[in-house]
Image (cartoon, rainbow over all chains, first blue to last red; front, side, top):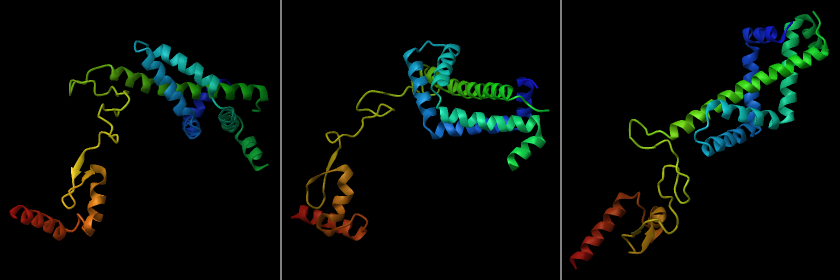
Length: 98
Length: 119
């Protein structure tokens, strides 16, 4: 199973949206989201002529480097369970029971 | 079908990166849009109404923030003292035991004043 196929299936069964909402909730709760917003706003105000693509690249690099490890690990754990459910639903339920 | 642990970790990381990318994209879009709109004149009011004021001593709409030196003062109808607007209601409640909420007492204040004026 390829990553693209798995991603498609996660979209189809609604797990992708659930994971996206969960990520947003975690980032807002820990305050990281507001810090990223302030940072991005500062860059946009400092460079009034900046285009979206450059602003997005800068913001994405900063986000990738600064995202809290606890959030990242928690999300990867949830993603793994969702992916396991797709790959082998029977094994996933057995793992949950144990 | 069983999944190798290394592939599972790699796929999970890829999906996490996609989630973070989507989140960052949406956040950047909103902020970029707001910053661009702030530079444009509003078509309705023909002012830069989206451009928030950042000057010290002013709120985001460029209105004066009330400081102790800028609060207006009004004369108390009872004791004739100059009272700050923010403290006027509290003062009237205590001033000679009279309350603003009591229409009778306020009316009597005005009657008392007009009687004094006649004298």
